[in-house]
Length: 340
Ligand code: 3EB
Image (cartoon, rainbow, N blue to C red; front, side, top):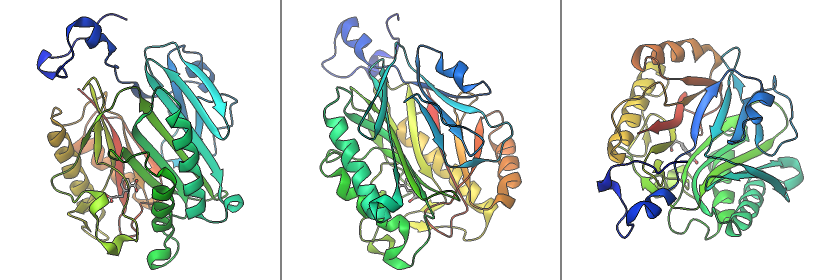
């Protein structure tokens, strides 16, 4: 790979010359592709391949992840993460991992019944991930995705998402004492209750970004649960060439907006996405290389959501998935990537 090019004014203080420049890790390229999984996995620079829903099988490769979320698109593409290879891979306890180009993908899946409850399950998964990461050169966690079943079941502090937040915080311990990664937490439907957590880490830290329209999640007031959610709104990757955007919904300050109004929630969500881009110093808007995911609670809303994105973000790849947002009143949530 040749030397990276990026504006000199972006150079980290103290980094001098091409050697330091070249050591800043170019972001993984995330894209949706209509190819066979075997073909995608044959690419030597392929860090991760994600398939969606029951239509996908298991593949004996640590780089392969089948998410328990059903796609509304047919045929549903695969999500591919490519790095400047080569990519190595392996399994350590329950953690499946791959690494290449300074990047690390790690995933853990836990069957909940064996763990007791969602809080214990999350704590155990995060404890094992944190222990694994502490021993890797790519110990800087920049982005995490969490999928758990029946996320809104249970009342008050017993709601499963709130118990998940408690277990996650307990399991991560001091691993994110310097600041939380960007994250998504979404409810999966059907199937056995299984927690799926996967992440992207790097040898170098990113830069956390908050949304001025929203209260930082870790400062949410007590009404949202005993342990506030542990995530940043977005993360700029080390070479400043990409922004990883957390799950974003119609939340203003800390309050959910537009209860029951899908169109208004979609517009508010896009306003939040644009605010995050601006706060990160990224170019405004999304383009054909900015893959997004829209998690839609009610299957009957999928058409409206698709039409909204066709009109408001034309040409942007948006993958529609059937998933529950972590607040019962929110109908849609969006996460994804913006490349510089
Ligand atoms: C919100 O803004 C919506 O618990 O990791 C978004 C992204 C949300 C990540 C998480 C939760 C999480 O509060 C919920």
